[in-house]
Length: 162
Image 1: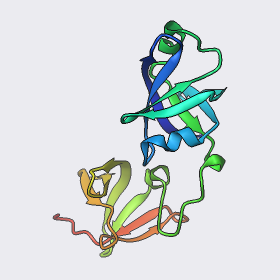
Image 2: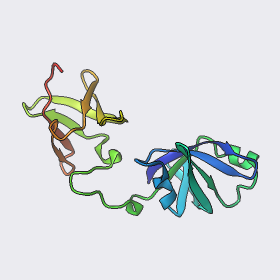
Image 3: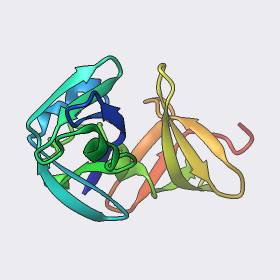
């Protein structure tokens, strides 16, 4: 399961929920007809009755969630979809979830640590690498030398003193 967002609040009084999406575009989450809601890997499947972008969030109606109290009970739940439901990544594109946990090594052979998370800065995405110190490495073509998912390693053109 790939986490695609989380429920932040009820929306209105008829059981709609407001969702903060983790997707590249706000409305990408609305492409999925089924969501799995849960925490800590325990999910319940919901068929999405209706979902639409609302400013920088998504609002959605799920079956059996018919009032504000029921919607409030979902607050904090993760929204996930099966990995197989995601479109195949294009050449030289990666899902963040595939990068998290990979080892980061510079072209001189120095291991910086592993990717703890990713940040979207607006200008470009950034690897947050945890090791002997935390490093922020821009995910740019001239910095990322190679992403080897098979070996679990990202090779970067990045100095130890940057």
